[in-house]
Image (cartoon, rainbow, N blue to C red; front, side, top):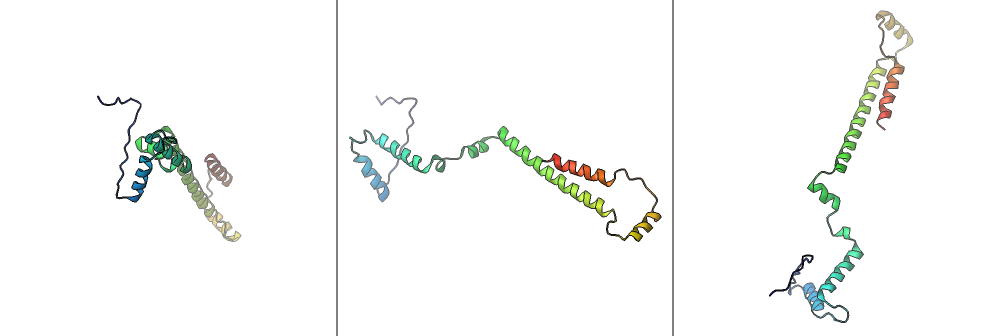
Length: 149
């Protein structure tokens, strides 16, 4: 009758190559453990690995949980992150577009023309009523830019 395997046990084997000096050294220590210090080879290996993890940090050796979860499925936090990225990109594009529109409006105001040229142009053109004056455009632009923050 073979030994009884308990449900809560996990078995892991270690293969040592006796042509590798590092493996020979490890095997020598494991085979000649002082029973007064270590009651079992198993506990010695567990203590050695625990010491290694404590001194170097578990994060150094294991797959990061977030990367593993991201590979398996999309979480609601991931969706929230994507939403924030899309909103930020849309806001930045809207700001750029508003700045372009303001540039077009300002350039259409004939800012750099002399007063005489402006007077001649205003007499030659038919008076048209502008739906939005400059203060309204500036107010709307500022409102758009402040909503993105």
